[in-house]
Image (cartoon, rainbow, N blue to C red; front, top):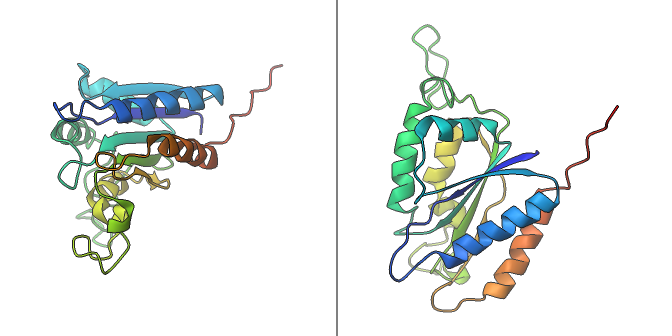
Amino acid sequence: MKKVFIINAHQPYPFAEGQLNRTLIDRATEHLAAKGYEIQYTGMTDDYDVDREIEKHMWADVIIVQTPVNWMGVPWSFKKYMDEIYTAGMDGRFCAGDGRSREDTSKQYGTGGTLTGTKYMLSLTFNAPKQAFNDPDQVFFAGGSVDDLFQPMHLNFKFFDMSPLPTFVCHDVMKNPDVENDFIRFEAHLNEIFPKVAAEATV
């Protein structure tokens, strides 16, 4: 893994300007660049080009999606981005249809992905506290995990035959933020996933 594409999925709102997500991206960029990784970036407020975004996905070894959790999912602007970029990529660049074949009925739905070997990481910022998850006594998520909640996003990437890296989460960021500890945990998370890139031998 040497090439990382970072997507800032934040949609600015008056009550959430995106500073935490932006800072996490800045820290990831600085951290990974210092280890020898090449970085590309797109934000939802950028004037992006569909084919260029497809190229970034195909270029990357790892895609990091940095996003707040809005109404139990990603912001509308990132959903629009996915509708545009991922639909266009169904021409064979991301997947060859849905994987099924009239000639071979044994082929299953969702097996047509062409981004085999590409990994992805979700980095999420939540208002929900950590204790709201993985506990059957909590009435709202009823024992479900963060990754259970984000199963649709995981399936989107699985549709392209991408592989998940462990999800990172900042919890309770509005009512009980612990930003400095979040930054420490984030750096440890990156260290665990991204080794230093070995220098290429010269002849």
